[in-house]
Amino acid sequence: MKKTELMLALDVKNLPQAEKILKKLKGIVRHYKIGPVLFTACGPESIKLARKYGGRVFLDLKFHDIPNTVKNAVEQARKAGVYAVSVHISGGIEMLNACMSLEKRPKLWGITALTSFDEKSFSKLGFKNSIGKVINNFAKVAAGAGIDGIVCSGLEAGRIKKRFGKKLEVIVPGIRLSGAKHDRNSASGATGVGGYADDQKRTITPQDAARLGADFIVVGRPVLEAANPVSAAKSILEELQ
Image 1 (cartoon, one colour):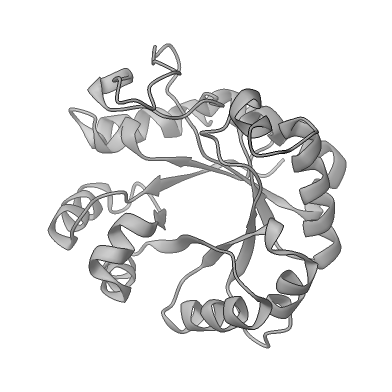
Image 2: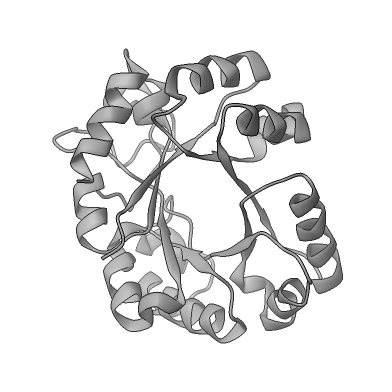
């Protein structure tokens, strides 16, 4: 079985903060996720900075638009040097096919349902099926389009790996450290483990994610907000062994 890899979410607000983390974790963490906070603040310079420190970049902007627009966005992401990009599977098969038609492209990882959703909040959007059933259908669409993987919570990871095996990489966010207690109802601003606001509702530990076959786990606040980010990252890597 392929070893589960750690990806750090660089969810900071400026380049100096990002560089501080990258310096500390150089040689320890190989993969970094750059999302809307850092990218909106700093643009492609954030990608250059992560690559400067040897990082592979997952650009997690969750593209969701008409096929040609998303295709062009993915092409620009490739030119910026990213390893992977996220696209919403709910954008449809035509959108996914447009991205796959690129002669050269980064890995395409499909977004399913955000880990901030629980069944109650999900149903309020009008979904009649459970989160698990919707994600299974999304995974079927993703595999049919030939994209490289999907992003889902650890609660769905095992089923996806069992059903689709090597067809889809599984990227799992919503990671919380073993033994840590956090408030699952903290969207209003309550604090969770480490004193940070925790709005994740479908969470899993690194060890359990690895056991279920996750290819990558995406960790942000448990490392970024730790008193010692290096020790926190090493602890997670040990748990993945």
